[in-house]
Length: 99
Image (cartoon, rainbow, N blue to C red; front, side, top):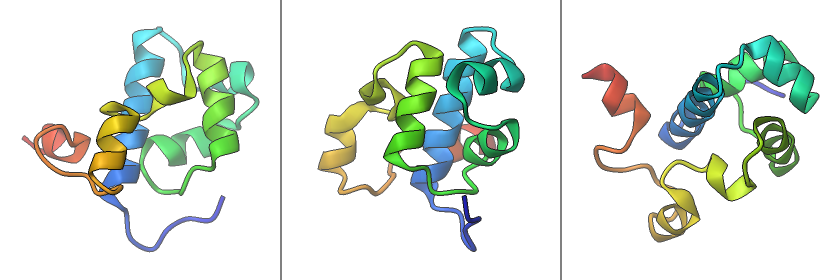
């Protein structure tokens, strides 16, 4: 996966949400890598919002975490659609972690 020049807030929020799901299941990066077939290095980049995740990768991670693809999106699909893909408000992982 190519690294992005700038980090989009939505990717940071998505990566943070994936990390939260993983840690909530007491899984290490290696555990999720083994369960999903996504490499540990790619997982780290995704969780840090450094790469633009594909739908295919999202589906693999969802399967590895035992959740639906819709559950991978912070705030859910409805919020993503209503925001036009723009992260806003206090739900952002960037804002939560900075405070």
